[in-house]
Length: 293
Image (cartoon, rainbow, N blue to C red):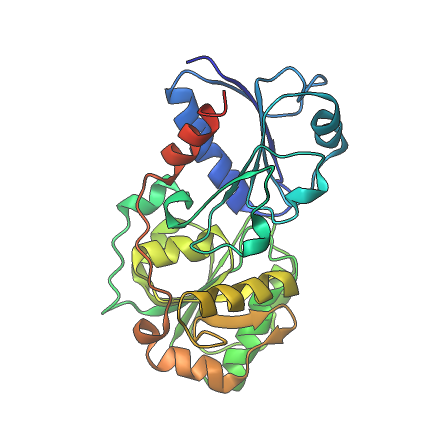
């Protein structure tokens, strides 16, 4: 197969987009595709397919949607309707709202389209003897949620170990280390091998959350904004959990009350999202893109 693919990734938002893009691109390349990163002057109009994994749509993509017939694939963006057209929407979540289905767009959604980081497959967390409650808010933590969680845990007099995993572009790291926090709090650059030594986790609602679920690590999801928070609650209800689900921790500036967090932490395994996520999500997404031609 020869498929010239232009890939537009939202690096400004977080590492989940980049991780997923690299995994799917690798699967496409194994099938003989040529992948362009979307930064050359003639992108994306030279490609046979345009794939955009982004929360925003650049002007060149909007122009291509209006003035070309090139198939357009959007990944994980409920606002895809602002484009003139979209041929395929891959929504990597176990549930999608009815509003995402349109007569013009093919929607592929479900657990089978969740793309995991390749490093996840070699991790075997020891949940019985794990020493730490991990906090991972992505590469940047733009709303400084990690600090809010530490203050929350400090006020709750949380007395177990906490491991804060921060990304390369993390905001306010010095203030995070100097602010109120529980005893036995550690700070480490993000790496998947730190997940070997956790018993539960607080994660931003993105790829990191689903990686924890795939590994069987009980995780409480904290959204970066109100839209994601509303989606988490709707998804939880649709999947049969309480409203709000025990695995929902709130969103930036509005964490759930201490009692809710204490409920989760008292029995993380009983209060977590349960899904089976296999390692084949990237190849399924690649096949769906290839099938557009």
